[in-house]
Length: 141
Picture 1 (cartoon, rainbow, N blue to C red):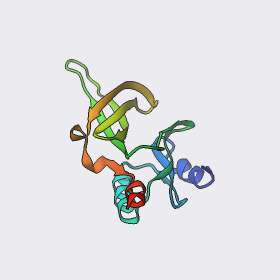
Picture 2: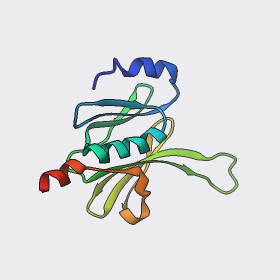
Picture 3: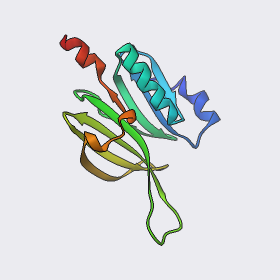
Picture 4: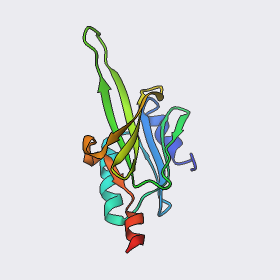
């Protein structure tokens, strides 16, 4: 993935957590707003696209997300609070869908350090946060 398109965007919002990647049609995307993930879901569904490459990134710290051989990718913002504490912890929870299970990792933001890894049922996920690999379903027909 080439950073030449991302760097001017980064300079406008250097404190953002970025969702970056390349789709199966070779289109690159660089999102600094989570709402764009939901719009990307609609676009991928409509055009039968998935990811060749996918990353979350804070400044120069880039995390590659495994997309090969999965049925879908899950990304959602989450927050964890504790009684008696004055602050909350913010996360990006990312996961890969295989069958009816989503294998999740919770990345503390902005550092993007894994705080927790676990397996969850798809019924416990936000459907609007999953982008399914429509290319796999299309090739099975």
